[in-house]
Image (cartoon, rainbow, N blue to C red; front, top):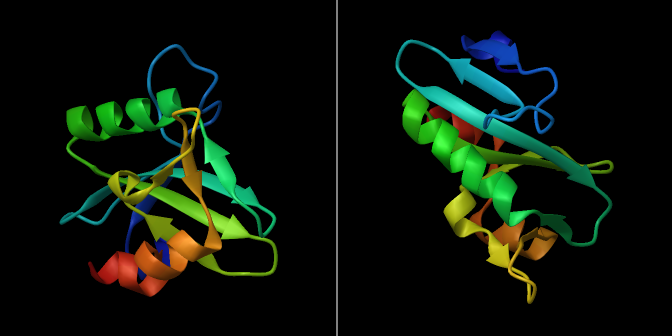
Length: 114
């Protein structure tokens, strides 16, 4: 999807399994650089480990990229959230829900135009 709108895109193999912070996707178009951590799930809440968000933000800061969470629920399109907009669970991890996506999420075209 990103290639089709002019972003060169790199999928980071082994994201989450390396000792250094690394998002699932890095994409840039000469004006913007995106660091995207991709998640999927059913229609309920999707929890994301606190450490994973911390590492996404760290990578994005050092790389000069915008950090984003890409979320896709079964049978729905991709939605994108700024990590700072995520809800927090009682255990301190982050949470994504359809309710949050309806309030704060961007669809793909909104992300690339931002």
